[in-house]
Image 1 (cartoon, one colour):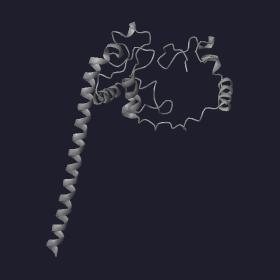
Image 2 (cartoon, helix red, strand yellow):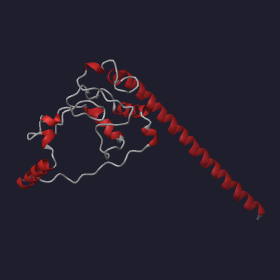
Image 3 (cartoon, one colour):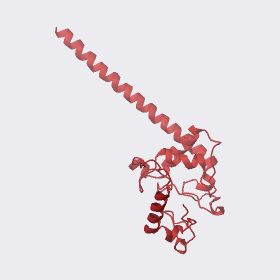
Image 4 (spheres, one colour):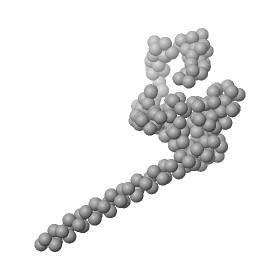
Length: 197
């Protein structure tokens, strides 16, 4: 009986060690995969992005001064396009969207010559520029109710809300962003912008 109990305890301990080693091995593999992805992202970034966004991700690449819309500075962890609440970090898919689709009205072109894996690797590298990604997690994406069916009544309600909320003062009656109070507006990076809809 004593031998049976000893054998049972040894088996239990051995099983625990095997599970621990397996977790350790998988953890090591995950870290190695993540490091490999960041390394690939760094190479792609240097070849495709650094000319505008800079080697340090600060938006001060050698081509930056030639551009009408200044390239984004990634070091603060602030992204213009995100589905998360204001002030939160973006989700990876939020960062992927402008890389894949470009940004209308700017020099940021769709990077479709890069594979999906390469674009996702660039995202992992971009996140190394800001300590926020080490210290914070993005909030959940904001959910929106489905778009209502268009009707004259809803358009009238929208027009009233647009006026009452003061949207006219910057966006203008026609949504062209050309009202006098739109002059001098600056974004989070202190760049001038037009409040277009």
